[in-house]
Length: 304
Ligand SMILES: C[S@@+](CC[C@H](N)C(=O)[O-])C[C@H]1O[C@@H](n2cnc3c(N)ncnc32)[C@H](O)[C@@H]1O
Image (cartoon, rainbow, N blue to C red; front, side, top):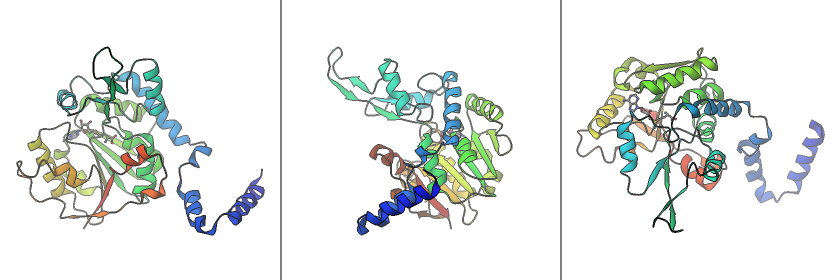
């Protein structure tokens, strides 16, 4: 079918559609990622190829043994929890690892029996669909903008921003040297160096960069990796340096949730007063309920 034939068929279908449903179907045509699957999504293919390159560089749980605090915190959660990196292992890969008995979605309640319960999964990285949502639906046009990822880990935000946005510069700051090495390897292999820079540092030493950033991304950055008093210090640092009017801050989870356990006992001053929340339209991105739950963790704020 050529363009004109396809266009006529679509118009005929819309002509037969219940008028009350028309706005919904046009919105779906405009915004749904269901249609992306019909296009050859070259960006997704590149991100999947990066995941394939990175998987053999890490243990299955995608945490280095040096990350003792993150490992301990994962073990201390109220429900049995495993770390499955959502960028490295999408649902299909997890299914095939479960079939090969290399991974499990359940734990045994009563060893040796069939009595099992689902494990909690946490991820320290954004998945490919979260990255697409972030750069296509959460953030505006980033032409000429400086994007910073606080705690860039595998570099997913940097690669997603390179492929799904026209940000001028994407800077990742990561305190783990092992993860900086992995990011550097990817940046070199995929020739991303014209727009991506990776810095090995604690974010609290990067005041000038934070002051210049137009967009700051903070995906679950401190909770698993720093003591509460250091988390409080880092949040104070962000609130004192990320002050450019109109700049955008993306957090997972919401700032209120991230700070709830920190504020009382760690000397964290009132935070959030310099920001206003920008409400996101999740209906613009029709996904499965599970994916929607993850996307709803993403919050956007504007510096006043
Ligand atoms: C949950 S991961 C975020 C991954 C990545 N931004 C993404 O969205 O896919 C948090 C990362 O932040 C790093 N990190 C924690 N505190 C940091 C700090 N103060 N400075 C720099 N990196 C930090 C950790 O080492 C960890 O790799």
